[in-house]
Image 1 (cartoon, helix red, strand yellow):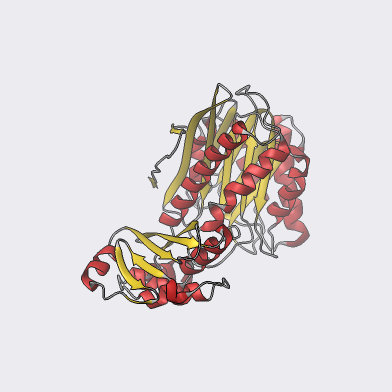
Image 2 (tube, one colour):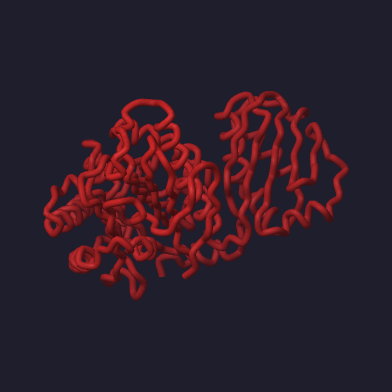
Amino acid sequence: MTELKYEVQGSWQSAPGGVTLPRGFQASGVHCGIKKSRPDFALIVSEKQAQAAGVFTSNLVKAAPVLVTMEHLESGFARAIVANSGNANACTGEKGLKDAEMMAEGVASLLAICPQEVAVASTGVIGKALPMDKVSEGIRLAVSNLSPKGSGDAAQAILTTDRSTKEVGLTGSIGGRNVSIGGIAKGSGMIHPNMATMLAFITTDVAIAPIMLRKALVQSVNESFNMITVDGDTSTNDMAIVMANGLAANALIDEEGPDFDEFCRGLREVASSLAKMIVKDGEGATKFVEVRVQGASSVEDARCIARTVASSNLVKTAIFGADPNWGRILAAAGRAGVNFHPDLTDVYIGDVLVACSGKSGGFDEDCARKALAEKNIEITLNLNIGNEAASAWTCDLTYDYVKINASYTS
């Protein structure tokens, strides 16, 4: 199992430790038998009650742990996140809800906290009941193995078809205090904007009010996890949760201002790094693609077009074959539901201008194919009608994606 790397921009600095980098957090990842051999049960715990917020799948079909966690986080506080892989506990009816509640109750009992302080997550095959005897053993093992260095183990335990762990840690300064933000995530297939098939758990020692924490999370998700796509499918189990325990002892962030803006920058950096890792680890993927839309009338227009182009199967298969078929790119933009002028739009593959003002730029096909043969590819659409811009991230669509998903439950 490999670990994907990330690059930090701005005032925040990378640091090892993931979700246990911030003060007062411990984590663990163990094997309890839900999966045959790989770790399948994770736990993240704050030593004190933390402010908490979550963003969840927009899919109408929501898994039991999503429904339970949505209810538990209504208070704005949490102490722990428990997650299993190998079984989604989705489409499992009343039993699934009871099992998700039992996961929270089991963790709460051993940690001597309230069940409502426990967020629950599951990922894996849909439609199968959780093996609660194994879950109970997982809870016992996870609690007994909690460690201030356990982030990597937790990152391993939440994976399904992922080929790589996804872990980020950042340090910075807010109000003259040293602060940290850490995160882990899973996701490889069933990934699409409006929350992907992913789990993301973020921790921080920043002191921030619940309402401001939720505002910061929603903003960061809209600019990161909601701007990625692998295959156009959204899941029943997606969630992104952040816990902030305040142990950095900065002045409480309870309103907008410089401290809130700085926290948002750090949170966005963590979320974006994790989101890009998910795309790079897309099922069967061989290439990472950034679709940039600039010169738009609004940020939302730019995001909509970027997401539509990034999710086009025709664009993604052309990228896999290194085929500079720019018509597919412009056609995808045209069905995004955004009003723009195709005859003003320029399209670039890397640095190669392949379409100028909506027509062929008479480009060098060999140069364009060479750009598409790279592992990291940039596609740019300049609408030339405004000053706003946005990016979406995707991967190529390959033969291996079909192979992986043709036998997912076997």
